[in-house]
Each structure stands twice: as C-alpha cells, then as structure tokens.
Image (cartoon, rainbow, N blue to C red; front, side, top):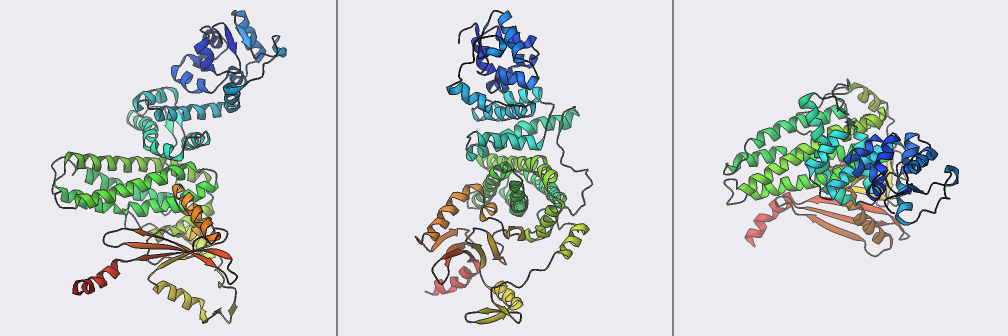
Length: 510
C-alpha cells in the first residue's frame, strides 16, 4: 500500500499508518472515534473499513465515493461501488477480516480483550487503565469474562491469562474504586448486595464470609512491617487458613455450573490463582514459624503484604465477576442445590449461616435415593461374601480410615465417602464428569492416567501430599470386572497423622 491507497479489507490501523488522509475522510463519514488513540490501538487493530461501515450503517458505496473524492485509490471496492473488481483477500488480510467484530457489542468486547492483551505485551498498567477509564463508562461482569474467553479462543494460553488475572482485575478494579470514591457516573455491575436475596442464599453466605475475611486481612495487615514480631503475623496467617473452605465452595459449587452455562473463563483463571494463594499462605506460615524468624525481614513483610493484596483482589473478582454471572444465569433449583451442599464445606470467617426456608422445603421434597446395587433382596445388598443392609453398609463406610471416590467408565463421579474431608466432595459432583471437580491444569494428567488404566498399562497411581504433621496418601486404582474390562477408577485417600503418632514410640524403641 502507498500513501494514496485505501484497502477496505485491511485494518483501520494499517490504513491509517499507510495513508495520512484516511483518518480525515473517516471522520467526515461519522467515525469520529478514530481520532482516539486508544480506540485506534484496540478496535483499530481488528476492525476493517468494510466491517466498520456495516457496524455504523454506512453504505460502502458512499465510503468509496468519499475516498475517491479525496483523491485516494480504493482497493477491494467491488463493481457495485463503481470501481475495480474486488481482489481476493489473502494472508493476514483474510484472517483479520474473518475475525473482525460484526456488531458494536463484539467491537466493545474486542476492545476490552485488546486492553488485556496490551498488559500481556508489557505495557504499564497505569497507561492502560487511563485509556480504560476514558473510553468505558461501564463494564459488566459478563463482558470481563467474555474478554478473558475471547483471549483464550484467540490462542492465548490459560496459564498466560491466569498470570495476568490479578493485573487485569486491577485494571477494571481501579475504575470501580474511583467510582466509589468520587461517586462518578460510571456503573460497574453491582454485587447484588441490595437485591433482596435471603440471608441464607449461597451468594449471601459467600459475601458474609468475605466480610469476615476482610476483617482478618485488616487485622493481619496492621501487624506487618519490617522488624515486627512474627508471632501475631503467624496467628493471623493461621486465622485465614479457612480460605480453603471458602474457595472450595465457589470452586466445587459455582464454577462447574458456570462452565455448564458456557462460562469457563472464571474456572480456568480463578481456580489456579486460588491454589497459588493457598500455597503461598501455607509456605509463609511454615517459613515464618521456623527458627530464626522471630522478627519480620523486609522480604518477609513484602511477601505477606503481596499475599494480602492477592486475597483482596480475589474477593473483588468473586463479588464483581463470579457472583454476578452466577446470579444472572443460575436457575432457582441450581441455587437450592448449592445451598444443600454449603454446610459440608464448613464455614469460613463466620460461625454459620442462616437457614434458607425455600431451599429447605425444596430439599424435603426431593425423592429419596433408592437402595443402590444390582442385586438387592429383602432390603439387603447381596455381595459375593455376604449381604448387608444399606444402612449397615453406610455405617461401615463411615468407619473406614480412608475416603473413597468411585468414577465409572464414562468418567462420571458415581459415589464417594468423605469422612476425612481431605478434599471437598459436594453432593453436586454426583453424575458430573470428573473434570469439573478438578482445576483445569490437572485435566491432562487425569486423562493420561485414565487412558493408562483403560489400556491396562498400569493398575494404580500413587501420590503423597507432604504435610509435615499429617501426610496424606492418595492412590488411584483401576477397577476391572470379572472379564477384565475397565469399569472405573477408585480414589483412596488416607491421612497418616494418627499413624505417625502411633508409630513414634515404636520407632524410638527400635
């Protein structure tokens, strides 16, 4: 392209860089936003003049005429515009045209995604935030989630989106904070705090836990400074240990449902960040509790402060992205099912939750499960070595020093016992694919393991969780029927804290 040529199938940015008069003509056609540098660097990178005409309702023939009256040559105008025939778009032009937004809503989402991509390219947060505040008067939770999903659809790895999670949350969060402080006119989708939700509604309970969490973060933050006594910081880190329960509720109850409604962005991104937060809390508690850490070093104080910041950012994302999406898309029955499983996770940063009467009524009306088993006679399950009633079987399973989870050949969770509560196991996981109960990054490992079980390459996989006081052994067993056909996988989880206590005297004597 030379400086007197306009190509309708190249991006607006490419045309503007190649042809100085292009911008002035576009302004006369009603594209005033083209003079905004941020718009040029975002939407301008994906929008073509032809697509822009379609979005704005401008006749392509009028656009071609305006360019020609300005003394410019138009490429790709077509016979209907009184010019030369369309050339076949090739290479980058063809790919860009295929991906160009086709509606104002798509253009807006492309702009949001482009701002996040600018952060990925290393542009300073404050520069991008300045453009964001200037160009967007409002942004919804759904748009933020769609921007993340658009990046992943366009090829950005989940790990990269996750790495940027805190950064681009700060981008949107910064505007919201300004809105609250200055009472500006911009409106971000609210957390539905005044939607009249019952106090026992799962969203209300998660907010209640977040309120308690914030108080703990404030108290802990006031103890953190270089040279400060480590003891109150350790106590504060111990008090926020319940984060695991809080995160478990959203990861096991909300995220799989959102995934089923087509919103996999939050689970792909948030779950990994949750894990990083929990690991860092645990690592800090272990290191600060070791000899030689009676006072905080500058590095210690920075790590604790950074952890508190990440936790606060995650609360923001929960209340401004995750919960609004769930409240918009979940059915009433979805919320009832979430309520049913809440208590099983334990409460975090509160003493309990109020009863939600509507959900209690729904739970009471649910049909009771029939006795399981293929061979049941007189209310007893017939096994090769005897028979037991369902009640007896349940009682025996509760006494076993292991937690069991069975996944069938279709890779769906069919049964679990979870007296040890090493991992969260809500009733909602029953009949779901096993993938929905694990972080996205774990999926390839599970797929590989199950494939090896099906192929009879191995019949078990073992791993350990090296908690110093209570190590946990997890063994996955392939389950085969009498014909040696694969019928599922059994997960066996056992805690060894009590075992170590019992062995200690024997080891000392030996």
